[in-house]
Length: 352
Image (cartoon, rainbow, N blue to C red; front, top):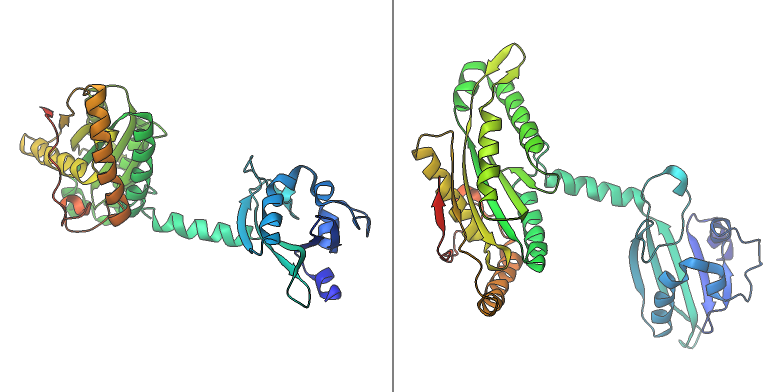
């Protein structure tokens, strides 16, 4: 068993109930630059040095009979893991730590043992697959699922900060004739160019997604005042009205935008989707190449806002847990749960 422990490419450690080191393998000695056998009898805090606070709770749980398996990253900044071979490659490293009780033949706990293994390659593959499942492969923007997930997270943060949020829906004008006349390769290149302009026109923290063939969605946080969403909508209309150069072609399209603005603590995802979708159709009926939106009511008195926050926050949390907020098919733009009845918004002002 000792020979096996010395040959594997994972770090191993065992301590007694006083946290005195009973055993370290060679991988552990190399990473902590400990001379062979010099660890015998030393306290775990001396061996781990500044990494001890991250490991100590796991050792204590092992003394209580609990096995712990945790994953950490080396740039966590709070509970850093043990360093690993290859840290000098300049990339984020991930480590899986396992700590369990060390038992004698009678089953009594006489210490704890730990194993640390580098799971960076596995973690990176998991993240690659997650990005692929949440990203539109053509444009590199978020897809419906990715947008839903990130909007729910952003809405939660905006609620904590008591901010305004805005949801914008965009539908390209005169895109189908481009596909019909010049073919799908030109249409795909145009969609990529549209995505680039949207990114350029928006702030880095704004969420933008392709949610359909020529349909896009934008979610804004840190909205200073309700009318700012109108400014952003008009900016996007202007950006997509400018001609696109695709190869030798100069293409003229445009976009219609529908948007809604609400205080995050009063917002319901399905209600935002419904309002933005209604406003988009209103803009298209009004002649395309324009924006239309609904603005939230002015801020309610503090006492009323607190009461509303409890009710709306509970509903929003239930919605996020039950249906992930947006991605179900069947409701407007294929986002939101069609079985839910959107809550009426209080006193919006429609502008176009």
